[in-house]
Length: 583
Image 1 (cartoon, rainbow, N blue to C red):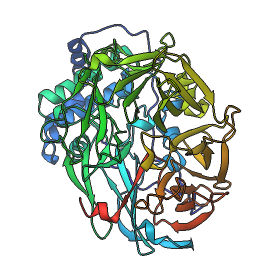
Image 2 (cartoon, rainbow, N blue to C red):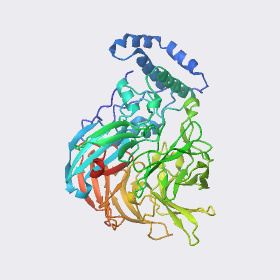
Image 3 (cartoon, one colour):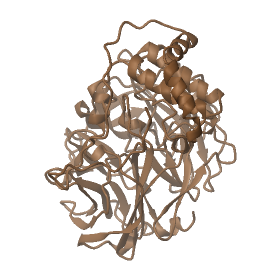
Image 4 (cartoon, helix red, strand yellow):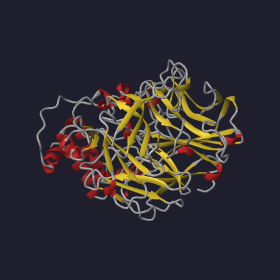
């Protein structure tokens, strides 16, 4: 069985507009018998012995360009998928996961776009770039949306004109697999299920490492989650790898500058959600180790992008699944959820990332200028599973006692977060932690299903009044965007003051706020624009929307028709021209 690169999604003859994923197929699998633990040798040797004819045919094909070991590993991949993997769950079936606008697209060179409605404001000269999963190969077995290769979709705006471009993030994983013509690294969120298949897949991966086909120390991640700009550098991020440095050319193309370890100061990985203090220029981040303590390391970059030493956090007893955090002017805030990482799943079977219903969620708070990770304080917050954080800030009472306030969507029914996101509800909450007596108070600020929240990035770490979030319908598709006013109807619940629905059959993702004039100190917090890619499933076309964030109905200012479909994805960023010129 050979692997093929993903072609453009085929179109049925009856309609020029509906995308289907007929090329994605999974082989039927026999009913699995009860698994028993086997050694790696006892698993692979019978496979090879019972497939001598297959291996012989591979040997005859050695002259076709690939080494025999590569062809043999491909054959063993097929055997694991066909005979050892348990039946694919519907939620991990690529025919479902990659249907419609989740289907991958090809790279696209810079292409000028048509402005269909309105005009692009001159203050938006720069680039909006969004990251997301876009697998380069047709998945043959189980597939999770989080496992796709990262692809950046950029729209460069200059003097009212727009140029669109899509490029893969050329990670080490992508490059190795691209050159070999097939997947090499197992999918973190979907490759490990039955014990026998997990042990075989891990053994096969180790064999690839030992034969020099793949070096995991050069990176294993997809960089498919987000982007960040700090220290005059622009990075594509995914929390299982180091940042990948990129730049935009004047004609709107995306250039890959490579995996960035900050002069050897950063190893293994980094969060996909670093926080930049706009007043100091410092960027704060963390990394977590799924194998041994310290499971969490906190660190920062100075305003020039120079990484400072790690601060080990030793108060975690097991590796967390920590996707986001927040900073205030004084503190860093870490939400530990019921989600965790179980590296034993790679050998014993079962998910590597999963939920522990007996675990009590908690929030850790540590000073930004602390010299020891032992000063982290933890506060239990039962039933509070936070994946994305809007913002956090410091407050003081009349006696001068410190408190930390955080705004974030609480993931209800967190047990469905990985496999049935359509059953997840994001309840936006305001959480206040009294640092003197340890009391935690919470109140919902909207009953709507909201996620992928943003705010004016100039207010990171200090009080902000306005929040913008996608309306999940269901997750991870967003049918519209809402504006929340945290100062409205204090204590009564609903804080939605403006909203925009994208229309029937139209869905977007995370909105992003861009200030109209970031250099004007007296500008109001909501004086700016919201932007997002929106896909119309009725006609299979994607558009770029710009909305007035200050208007009562989030009025549409400009609609740009994109030259190709943009699959639903994750997080984005807007970088102004003056910052793009620094790259």
